[in-house]
Length: 524
Image (cartoon, rainbow, N blue to C red; front, side):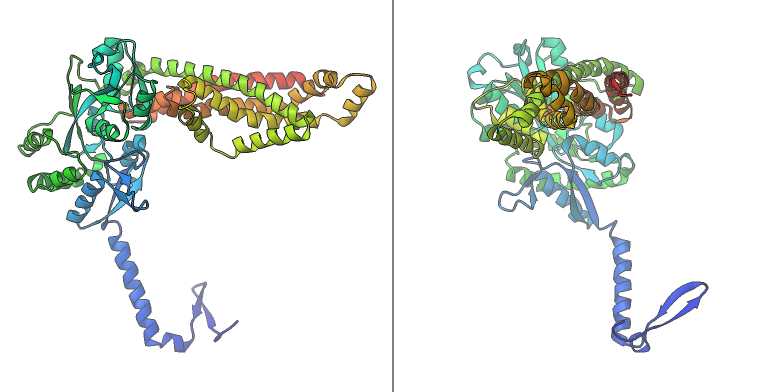
């Protein structure tokens, strides 16, 4: 070995290196070791306490949480500044955790972060399942319609037979679900607050119900719609903490009250252009320690009931019919998409086996393009990217997206199955005078289908699960409906079990049928 040798000794059955004496006696070395030990001790002792971890979603999260346009690696927003205020007063360093908006509640409940803030609404479910801070901003749920419809579509009651979009898992969505029964409109759930307004301008929906903060921000960037002045509901933004974090919640409440008194919150809201005439009276109410309700619904609708106040099984019984309807959407969509994928896949595989050089190159390019890009991106391109030229309905776009994606994979299965048929059989058939078409339809295709049956079944089961992605196109399938159920219930246990059971009920019969066919066609 290079350098000075070292001796070793065995003590208590353990191998312990004894470093050379000149190293052991070096004062600088000893000081370095001591400093390192102290530093590690300090870090270990202080790391859990000197960081305030907070969760949010910067995707479409302005003005709450967003990437700084000048420095995309940094976050800005009113909730970013409130989190920094919390950390500064607590003597901690803020640390951001990027969590999908619909998963923030669950992430906070399991302890991934200390507090969640991303324009989070105060709801009965959150009050029942989490530690909720006092409200720090009051908003109004407002209706947006196209400019041409503004004179006649002013309230929810005017939207009978119309389609209204909003964010899923929000107060607005709960209001629309009740308005479906009360007024006969159709509620559509979106994953973000950008596409509802773009679809409104394009004519895919007739109105959008969201809070005034989001509506006014989108109105500044998108022209063609009007925000109606009537208030449909009043709500509040809050921070959420785990149920066991009540002491920290109380400290944050004190910070918020102080920020209301000294004008810190007002300056923050003015900076982000969300301060309005509603806030002074709201601040006064909070500082007077009056009970601030989660939200107040106006315009004739009852206050939306929360399933969190019901027993878990009563809530499951209430939501199960909607899960069954969503399952029907999933199975119909999957069956139609798989049938189309099989048809397109057969054509692609046949073209790649029997086609000329140009057609083979084009088909191979298609397969590689589809396999090399995410299905989610393909769905967005079909529905949103092509909207300027072709406005596909959401279900049609979902059907085409799944079919075109799986057709690429199916074609590879069929191509390999066709090429797996022994060449000797094909030559024998040709020798007997069969045409190439007869060879394909009578000899090659039947055997190839038997080879392809198992992977086809696997792909269909996979499509049943991948159909959950079409919720980004406002198609309310099983997984999306389960997510809404879980958000309103404040727990994934029962909704997740019901969802898994329904998926198994759809996929297991198909797998059993495929096994029977395999046994029937097995070569002995």
